[in-house]
Structure formats: structure tokens, C-alpha cells
Length: 406
Image 1: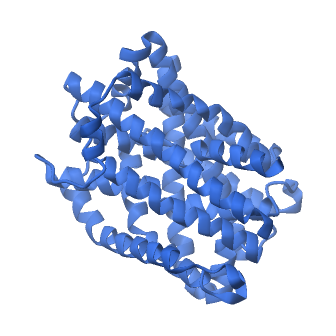
Image 2 (image 1 turned 90 degrees about the horizontal axis):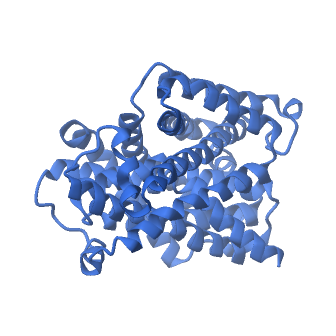
């Protein structure tokens, strides 16, 4: 019964991890600009993150190490330094985007400009991290994220052409604006395969003291949980294609264009459902990314760490998420456009995948850590393909940003 509860809560938690401002913004932009054509990018990203999350949980359960611990120990600190600094910087960009998303939700709800909300949002997140436990952060707030299922309901009620939806699962050449099409595709992959997701997951497994008895639970959470988040992202794309594109909105340049997405289905309630979905999904991600920054800093530098510890027991860990939230809030407080930051950070995230996934592949085949539970041919093949995909994205991201970025 306990394992079934873990699986259920793990699936719910995927809303706070997989579905956040990056997934919402990129899926909505894809639907508005290209209809159902970019569904394949969400499907591909979901499959990739399922493999990475499953391996992250398996590694943590068997070895008792987080991925960051393993990379630093296996390859040495000098090797670890490049992915360490890159992920810290990118996580900070993602954190700022999430704070911006939550602040925009509050602007939509109150009429007060988003930049005034940046510091209060960051302070509330800090207070919850300072006072809360890992179980509360991981699961408590994420339960509220079930409100985002309203996109799935809307997608069904709008009755999309199922043949066109299925056709979107296969990559195709766009009829217009090729550079923008591929840039949005790259951004979707970055939102789906964000390193903070599987790094956070491995830290959470260690926090929850998983062992080999959790391997079945881990597979269920990875497969069902990430699929759950991917399904909601596809629903966002479908709704954007049927509502925004049909109303002449083919490019999203401002978050204020988005709240009308759910109005044709839910009426006035649709506006508030969108606001709630945006705010809750972003706030859940703020907590997870802020916590992951602290995990990464503490594990990389060899400090004590753990959300269930009191701040005085791991001062470096607590200082790390405090500073991350402050530095993440400052650009938004000064008026940086959250939408542009979101799209850019998602694309750059996709480009940096090889920095973490390559050493992770070695760890998953090192018997000193993983014993008899190492990767098989399917998992290794999947990781190699992810590395190749990430390498291509690293090459094309900047040119696509310059040519087709929004």
C-alpha cells in the first residue's frame, strides 16, 4: 500500500516538475504558430525524460548517491566543474523564468504589474523552503497542480481532428517559417529534458532513503509520471492550436495573449483556471529548481545537505537556495520579459544536455555504483541517442535563436 501511495504521489509530483512555465509557454507557442505539427517534439522529449528519470532513481536507490555526487566522485572535481557551473547558471535562468511566470499569474489576477510581485514570490518560496520538509515541497504543493488537467478537459471538449493530432506525432516540414519551427522544437525539447528534473529526482530519492526495493516503484513513477506531464503539455498545444490560431494569434509575444485559451470551453472560469494553472505550476517549479540549486551546490562542494535538516545543520545548503531565489527574482523585479527569458533558457538547456548526460552514462555502467542493476542495451541506446540529440541541439541552438527566436 505504501508503494502504491508513493507511485500516486510521484505521478502528481510530475506536474510540478515536468509541467512548468517552459512547457506551458513552448507548447502554447508551438500550437499557435504551427498547429499540431510540433506534437512530435513533446512526445520525443517525454520519452527521453522517462529514460533519464528512471535511471536517476535507479542510480540513487542502488548506490545511495545522487548523480552530482557520483559525477564528482567518479571523475574528480576538476571534471565536474564545467557541468556544475553550466547547470548552476542555466538553473538560475530557469528559476528566474519560473518566478516571472508566477509573477505574471499574480498580475493577471490583480492588475498589479508583474515586476512588483517578483520579490514577494521569491520570499514566499524561500519561507516554504526554510520551514518546510522535503515531503511537503515534493508532494504537498504539487497536488494543487492537478488544476492543470483543465487543459486536457478543454482539449477533449474542443474535439480536435484526431487524424491531424496523430499526424503531429511524426516530424514534418513546416509550410512556413522554418527557422522558427525548429527553434520552438528545440525549446520544447529543452523544457522536456531539463537536467534539473532528473538531478532533482535523484536527490529526492536519496532524501526519501530509497533502496533496491523501490526499483519497481521508480519505474512506475518515471513512466506514468512523466507521461502524465507530457499529456498535459500536448493538451496545451492542442488548445492553443484550436483557440489562439483560429483567432488569428500565430505568434505569442506576451503572456497576456494566453488567458483566453480556456475561455471558449469554460467561459469566465477559463480565465481563472488559466491563471491558477500558470501560478501553481510555476510556483511548484520555483520550489523544485530552488531546491535543486541548493542540492547541486552542496553536493558539488561537499557540504551537508537535506531539506529535512534544520537550516542551522546545513547552513551552506540553506544559503544556496536563499541566494538562488534572490538572484532569480532580481531580473524579473527590474522588468525582464519572462516570456523571452523562458524561450531562451529552454533552448540553451537543450544545448547543454551532453555535459550531464555523458558522465551519467558512464555511471550507469559502472558496477562499483550500480552493481547488477546497470543499464541494458535499450537504456544505453536511449542515452546515446539523447547525447547525439543534445550534441545536435548544442550546434544549432544559437543560430536558430538568432534567426528564428521570438
